[in-house]
Length: 258
Image (cartoon, rainbow, N blue to C red):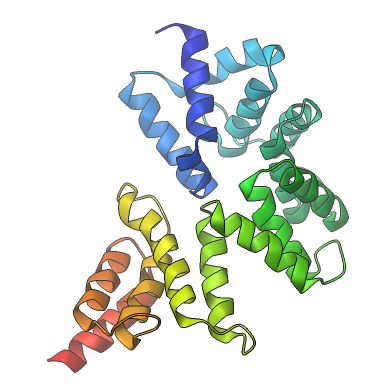
């Protein structure tokens, strides 16, 4: 396979709509599996990317990702931050979001929530789903800015509509708990949307917690008819994927059923 085509394929994996819905460590795991399936060594990908980094912001972003997760090289947050910065300066909005994460958590750079907020805002205004989700939380929690629940909810809804599972769950939670906007059917809709990502991803991808939320909806009848068997099925699926809370719900309800 042509080296440049290989790198372009990898960038497509990282920036595809499917990848954007998964947590970064899941994307990294998925990338490792894909490379092995193609009989490609991670170090080869790293060295090729380093050689071609000047050709586009996408390769600069890829270098940042490889350094961040130690694919083909050791984990190096400082170098990851450097290459994400180069990509962001070239107009990569996903890179801006990742820089925000680095500033918020002190990865390879000192914690600076003001700069984190700035990069989330640039990313979100550039149309990036991750950026919208993180900007929403910044407004809701007052990270690097004053608390503004209304703005936060606007960005949260945009991220949820774009398919961001955590934002979909937060929308569902808010609809359940906010006395002014309580809407059980809409809450069920958002929990269902979030759970669909976990159900249809590979066994070790997606977040099993989303399945547990949907199981609770079926068990109690939140926005849908009560269906204990469907709830148990979802709890079992979530438990098999590592959600400890699902184990508690599963054991409690199996005991009750019998």
